[in-house]
Length: 319
Figure 1 (tube, rainbow, N blue to C red):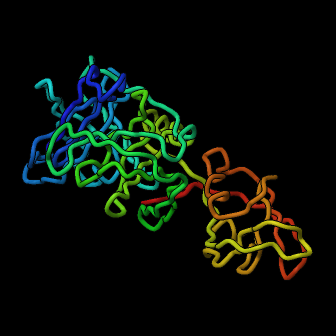
Figure 2 (figure 1 turned 90 degrees about the horizontal axis):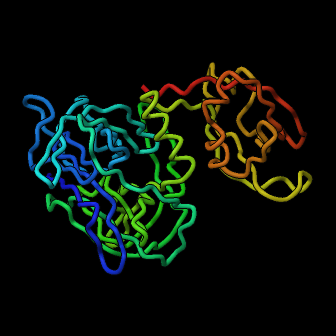
Figure 3 (figure 1 turned 45 degrees about the vertical axis):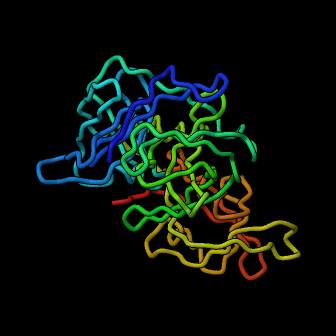
């Protein structure tokens, strides 16, 4: 699929600046509006589907979707609409957030301005930029249809929910993945990731959590997450324990930190490291690198009785 760089001075309507975007063709990611032509080859004899991307820095860091560069090849070419094309390498990919960072052999790209998805409101105008079905540099307009959507993601045996996704009715098609979702001020507020149906596009938000993921990918080439080894679901607290919800443990992985701490199926996890746990998302958001190897207290309810356990999370292995 082809990709294309949208010129920094391109505009849509009144004072709406289109953020630089890029696209990736068979193995090539698009950045600052860069794209790879149809059938672009990543390695001799290996071709993959195209995608789009966003330029993060003038010296060649590009942001795209992890599934766009999910093949074994770690290199490709990115071609820009001004006629330039550059080789790139995958710096880091995180399937559990569907984000990836690439580094192009360039030094004078125009970086996109990153916005703040947490400031978005339902009904707000947004623009999707990308290379749908090989039509490079395409722009579609729509609104924020909903906020706080979720999408399951998998990496090896690890399963995680990508939360706080932005839903938009701006038309998204194959090839838009990795491209920018832009607000009316020209700021990138999301990275287009999936089409859930006609008029149902989803984008990973640009917010403090994803900025941290992007930073980790740029500096370390990976994202470190803590791991407890449980599966659970939301359920209401027992009346004697107060109001609100908690997470009921459904399964405990043998040999995991949770098993070593004697956490059991049917236990109700109410609090971890001093923070209330009301749903699986709360627990997931706590599994940050800083928790790896730390001793944390867990407050649980077992058979109606409160207990306090100590857990030591380990690093999540996704291979």
